[in-house]
Structure formats: structure tokens, C-alpha cells
Length: 392
Ligand SMILES: Cc1ncc(COP(=O)(O)O)c(C=O)c1O
Image (cartoon, rainbow, N blue to C red; front, side):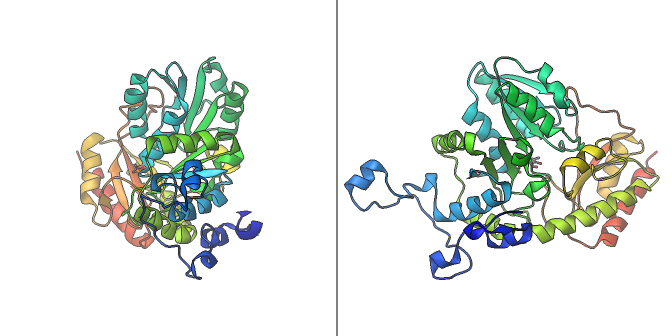
């Protein structure tokens, strides 16, 4: 549920269909115009001097940007949302907007690798103290909080291994110390987990994945609560990292059908994950909606759905078996990213982890389950498993 047009309470798919632009604002056309803009003209010198009009320059906002960000605010329950050129930018802009030299950043060890790279290189260079924590730390995070801890960065479930974080407990401890809680919520999207309702201050999503849904657009979204919205927006304007109108339009278009697509991804991925648990060549399936997952109870408490990406652990065979699996696939493509209509598989690398290394019986493979027919996908995976099992 969320607040849609005219303050009416709407369920998720109604919100997705009707939030953002008002067709009446543009001659009744259902979709908003794609406004290509740098310059915005002012009526007179006084309004120019006072910047006293709604739109002032292309980097700071356009009607197209508003159509998307207002729709996302309705889903997130946020005070404001920015649209940036990639999901990675959505993870890097908030720390840049809030951290200063001498601040301490706590960041989950199962974070998306490029976010880690950003923290380890650029943030450290700017004088930020970067420290990783175990994804299952929960309320124990308070033992790591220092007087200069400014941001606690979370991502749940974690990339590739899908550890679920106790976000409410982490948020409580962080807030007691005056720290800001940021969360990369790309996996669940605000349809299956609403970060701000669980104590998160800044919600991050790679709209490249499910919102766009077609593997043809890069975009990131960052939504903030009332307390932090102004500073986030100021950081966005300072960096000039706005995204282009055509990409924004494509993501708004994707959002309209995201509910039905995500439900299909959810069902197919769960069906395949359960089936994989019974396959001899698979040692473990890392999917938090499975009862066998160590964080299943936490996932069930906080999430209201699961998306279409998870990992499997092969039963031994090392990298040779991993490559044999991947090379035998005919429907799954070998490629990065996820959330699109087509299935993908990638080898998982955990060598960057310092704490959440886990102990696995074999190598890991991440599967993104697309919108194809499940039986065809199972047949393709079975080809991969047979090839992996045949490795000496
Ligand atoms: C959890 C997570 N966050 C952020 C991103 C970055 O998104 P983008 O590819 O749009 O930069 C990804 C991409 O795979 C991701 O998996």
C-alpha cells in the first residue's frame, strides 16, 4: 500500500500504473513527455535572480525526472528521490553527499563488489575510515560504532551469497549513535522490502535491474526520508550527476509492468531453486526464501517476496566444474547484471571478502531467472549440471 494520486491509498500494482505524472497535465496523454533540456527560460530578471520558478536548469530536475521520482516516492514512502546514471552511481552518490574526511563508514562485507571498490579507493583517498562488518551482525553492530561513525551502509540480501541483514536492529543501533543508515535494496525492490519502513534513511536501487527490466538501460535511484532529503538533493546538484531523459522515460515505462514481471521472476526462481535443492550435483542453494537458508526466518519476518536472482554451490569440482557448467548452457547467457527478461549465469568470485567468506563445498554460480518457460530453463540447467558432474 502507498499514497497515490490525490492522496488515495493504493495497492502496489495500482500505484505502479498510476503514480508519477498526471495525464491531465499534458493534454490527457497517458505517458509524460520526454523533456530534453539544459536551458530553462525565466519570465523576467527578478525570477532569474531569485530562481523562483519550479524548474531552473536541466541538471536540477525536469518534468520527466519528476514523473519517475514521484512514482518512486509513492513506492518507497520517501520525501524525495534522485535519478542518477547507473545503479553504481546510486551507491556512490549518497556516501559522497554525506561523508567527510575523518568520518567512519561501516559497510557490509557482502556488498556489491564495485561499491566496495569505491569505498576502498575513492573514499579512503578522501580521508574516510572504511570498515567492513559481518552481514549477520545485527544489533552487534553497536560494538563497532565509534564517535565518528557517520554512515552504516547495508545491502540485504548480500550480493551473490544472499545473507539477510537484521536491518531494524542495525538501524536502531546506528540511530542511537546518530549515524545515517543507507541500504542497497536492488534485490527486493520496494515491492518486496520497503527500507524506510524498517528504519533505513537512504534507500538505493539499481533501476537497471527490475524497474528497467529489459537489459537496455542503466539507471540508479536514491530515495531519502524527510531528515536527509535536502542534503541528498544538494549533493546530487553539486555533483551534476543527473541521468538523461530517455533513460528516465524507459525506467518509468518499465515501472508500469514491474509488478507482474517481478511476480513471474519470483515464482520461476523459487520453483527452480526448490528443484535445484534435489539435484545431486548441487551442494547448496543460496536463496533466502528457501526454508533451508540460514536467514530464512529473518527474510520471512521482514520481506514480502523474493526476486529472481540467487546462487548455487556445486558439489565439488572446483573451477573446472564451474566452467563446464557455464559452457554447457544454451538458453542462459553468460553476462553480468540481472533483472532483465532473459536468464543469465555468472561465476561467483568471493576473493574480495574479508569476513563473509563462507565455507562452501564447491564453486558458486549465480543464476538470474528470466521470464522464459521454467521447464526450458530447468532443462538448460540440467545440461550444465551434467557437464559439471562429468568433470574428473
Ligand atoms: C546489488 C547491486 N547494486 C548495484 C548494482 C549496480 O547497478 P548498475 O549495473 O546499474 O551500475 C548492481 C549491479 O549488478 C547490483 O547487483
